[in-house]
Length: 207
Image (cartoon, rainbow, N blue to C red; front, side, top):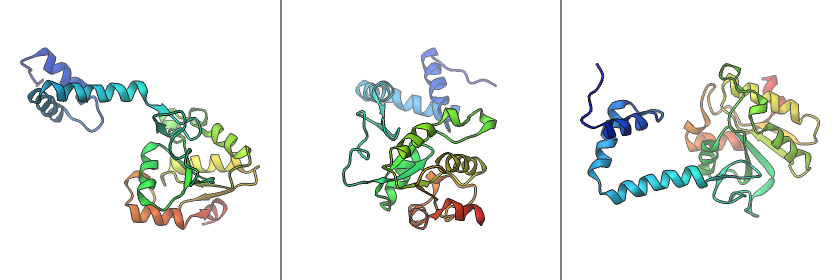
C-alpha cells in the first residue's frame, strides 16, 4: 500500500531524499519532517551547501581528488613524497588512508574499478593519466590500494601491465585487508599496516 501524504510538497521532498543510497522511504519521511520543524535558515543553509558542493567543487588536475582549487592540498604540499603514488578507487579511500597517518606520498584516484558487469572498462577510469604521470619519470613507486575483490584484482593487473614498460616499482597493499573487503571499511590500524607492509606486484601474483 502506497504511503499517503498530506502535501505534494512533502511527498516530493520524500521522493528526493529516498533516492539517496541507503535511505528508505521511512527514513526519508523522518528527515523531511525534521527539516520542516527546523527554522527556515537551517534549511536554506543545508540546501545552499549541497548546491555549492555540486556546482563549485573541483577535481584535482593531477590526482583527481576533490578540492576547492585546480590542484588539491595534498598534491600542492611540498612535504609529501611526490615520487610515491598510491592508486585508489575513489575519494573515500583517500580519506580512509589519510586517517591512518601512515602514508606521506600522494594519490591517484581512478574514479572506479574495471567491472564489465557494470559496463565499466579501462577507458572509463583515470588510468591513462596515471601512465602519463609515471612516464614523466617523477614517480619511483606506484602502490595499488584497490579493494581486494575480483574487480579490484583485475584492475591491479591491468595497471601493472600498463606500467610494466617503465622503470617504476609497482606494489600492492598487504593482505591484512581481507579478500573481498572494501578499503574504506578497513580499520585504520589494519589499513595502515597493509600500506607499510606492502609487497611488490610480482610477489603478490606468485602467492
